[in-house]
Length: 229
Image (cartoon, rainbow, N blue to C red; front, side, top):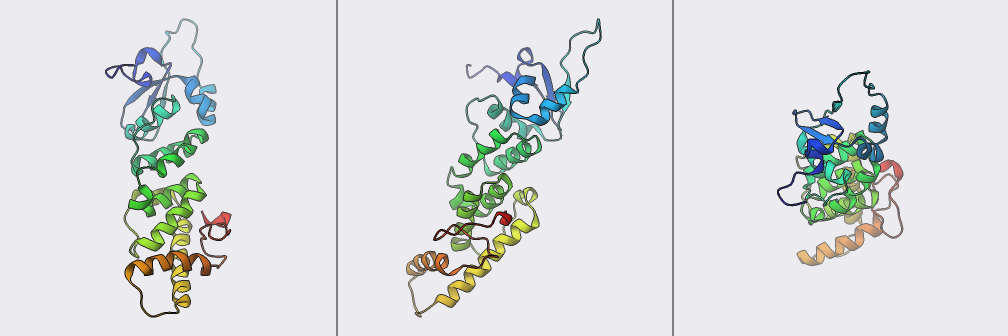
């Protein structure tokens, strides 16, 4: 496909279904493609009314509640096209759609994107929320640890809150609180340089933050409880 050619889902000649987004954008998709990755769409297509005798063949229309800015990131993944460039907001949108329509294979591909572009370093809090929403426990542990050790003690504003429950946020805050308690209890000397203190925290918190009610990063063989996400 040349740079000027439309994607298959943007070409009316290549689709047998119109996927119409909440902002009125129409994508001409193949029912087989969507049915292969989504049992929800597969069931929807089974309920589409068959053509009556003499009725002209027209593409059926399925309206979805998400905007085109979200679907334009999902459809390349459905079509196994080139991986789209995804921001954290895009990843959140993709996870939301894939959970709604049970696109488990597409959802799992967000693991790689969450770990890319230094997202954990630049915005570990949002990465934690999206990893919890996507069911990526290992990434949630990494992000929670990064946020606890290196980020100011406040919750930033992010649309990713919409993707998780209040319990998920509580677990992160409870983890930080218990890590702080463990760090204070473990202090045996009175002065450190800033660099020494950072290294010390990274070592002492894993060894002393052992409460089972805490959202535990996998330190020393410990595992996060399944109900923490």
